[in-house]
Image (cartoon, rainbow, N blue to C red; front, side, top):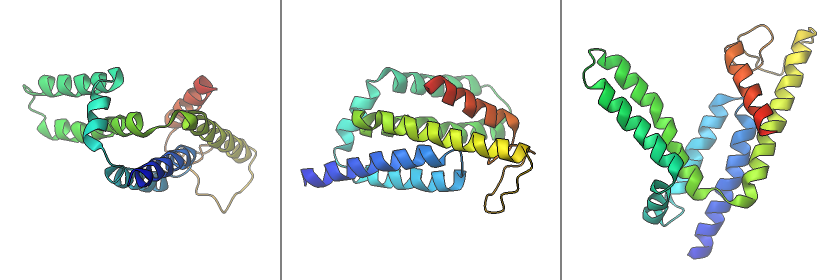
Length: 166
């Protein structure tokens, strides 16, 4: 049984590599992979120990503090629909618990490199779009020279993160 849990953990780490590679290209595919990661995480075993380990991590404590502070701040608000919408978007912050408890150190560079390679490919596609090359096989973004993203802001933020990681 222990061997199965180790194999599930390894599969999750490979899916994390694929997730970070696909993130700049296709948000729907990335979301599907993330849901698969979450499902496999439930079968990876030892969930109680993993969650207790994650709760001791400073990043997880910061995320929980941020979430609780937002809840405390929103008590006196009249804009409940906006508060619930924002709380719904905050749920993605809790994925850090999965990443902290399941990520194997040997996969850290693989995940980072997959992300950097995908950003590099995305940047090449952006430059080709700027040079008026048509790429009918690609679903491009909604900006004129922004592949795969809605706005230049999202694209530049990802480029900045990639530069920071490199």
